[in-house]
Length: 118
Image (cartoon, rainbow, N blue to C red; front, top):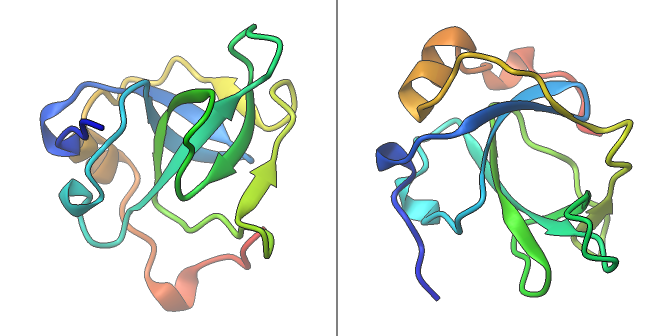
């Protein structure tokens, strides 16, 4: 399964669980994510509408894409967080298209400044 270098890709800026994030429909190489950012994969619904319905460290079936966040997302013990595509996911239309631009627009959060995980 091919994985791509996040530093060479162009993204869509989104909001997930009320936080800024980058989205790409590819599987990204975890090793290409800069320190201080977090990579998750997203599952789409079983009905095939393409709605994002679950976030995890890795998705095998119904892979919608990958997201990069500047804060960790607290996953439940089974590792799969169900989300509501209408409440928890928004295409913000932001101007960040690269990881570098995302890091400039949203400076990394120091560990002692982080909000509690969801």
